[in-house]
Length: 266
Ligand code: FES
Ligand SMILES: [Fe+2]
Image 1 (cartoon, rainbow, N blue to C red):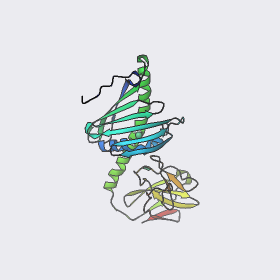
Image 2: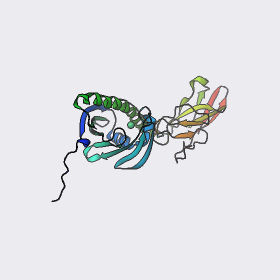
Image 3: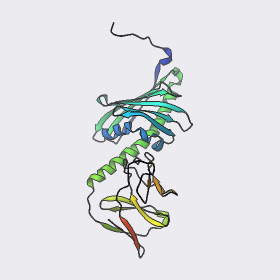
Image 4: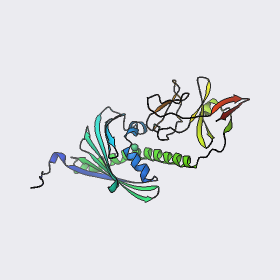
């Protein structure tokens, strides 16, 4: 006998409680990148996740301990199967233990995907399935609103990077009024932000060196900006990642003020 048959166990029965479908304006590459990106959960999706600790990750997917905003811990695993254009997220431990979310993706254009997401939850009585399924669908609507924003913005920045050429080496900006800071400036084909910190002008890239997230949040008292996508923090004067990461903000133009004008020079 080459296999063992294990009869169904009532405790492990999974009920299909519903399907969420959505068309998203992103490429398959961005979508897979997003599925494998465990690190963004508590930052981009802070209304659903408070913290995450990675246990294992690779091209296969990831396993991580997550904490909900209410303080409940779960062990989640996501397994990506590119040949089936599918990833399965399993709740291994925690309040939703046994739940599985199967996501299939169909490319309908170079940057357009149809997503079909099925929710399987153990032991849901038939009369409650629609209600449980709707709750999952509502949660996924919010998660995908946030993910589409991140994927689209990242794609826009990647496209812009390809287009960027060094067209000019200096630029002038009228001294902005403090309530309008930061000011976006394009110099040598790249986007920068001009801002004030500790009574000085500071200039830093508008896009995060990690995955090109927007660095438009206010500067904190320590002189840091925080990227909303994965929570990396950067010192706006030294460019260092203050969480100890290897990313740096990179070269920035100098800024000088003269007769009510800021002059930015590379
Ligand atoms: S893009 Fe990941 S922290 Fe900024
Ligand atoms: Fe996400």
